[in-house]
Length: 385
Ligand SMILES: *Cc1c(COP(=O)(O)O)cnc(C)c1O
Image (cartoon, rainbow, N blue to C red; front, side, top):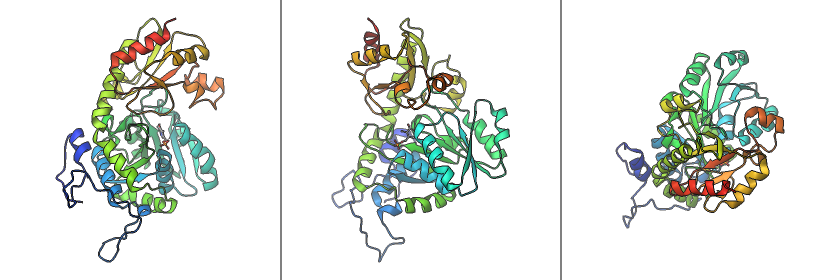
């Protein structure tokens, strides 16, 4: 890859960082190198897709490192691959880990099912009551794992406070930054050691790719990369080229999605057809003050509770939507809604859901890039009798 001067500006980085014009025809896009076999006689290191060092992998990693202010990155086959690989790379048998309570379901199932057989112990801590966290510390506690904004209530973790606490106890901090994307939040600037994304969401942005990324320092990437090579969660050159194309519009898309979410949150907040709106950009949101400090934009995710009773009314509303699509996943250019009680949180008992604040009427919304007034209109027509 040719050397580029350090770029500033999220759009300039999205478009230019890493992208290589080194090709005979001077095409402006990085050539796709679909090879699984690379010559080795004149190279410094052996190149092979599962070593995570092919040209198309490196281009994407360079963009993501610059966007997330990281020294080193690793592109993996899914968000869960990034999360499991990072945890396995940094932990060993006999270690103990602290996890933030409100975690992505897949992460929760990974630790519940796989940690016992690896001999790794863990506790869930209430990061909203830091004074209760000390009681979970053990001599073998290695790291603190965070996720903010959280799913589905968009709760905000005070990243700086958690990093300070972790550092004072010699713990590493890891964060799942999927909901914010690098455009809204850069945890490494706040002292976090390792950032992971499900690229399937905002980074891909068109609901047609599945990948993940780990971003950290050179020092911490060394043990993670070793495990990654053994696990083999790499992706091929064609997918890398699609990710590179997606990333060029990342800043454009996510800023528009954040603006749209802010518009919708304001329109629904206090509306007679809606009894609650959860969006960190609303001054009434309990995490608003912290979000304002640690986020550049409040993001494209919001949740709300229409003024109805019971899930059937929610399903009726979803079936009446004309522009918004009831579907799983998030982060794409199209606006999606889902019912957490019937999807991400369906395995929990109704009592457990209630305790977490996930009611049968809660609707989670991944806001797309459409005209926001059309989105509000669609929600209100679907809610009116
Ligand atoms: C989707 C998601 C993941 C898992 O990502 P996959 O690409 O589906 O493996 C992890 N964390 C969060 C917050 C997510 O939304």
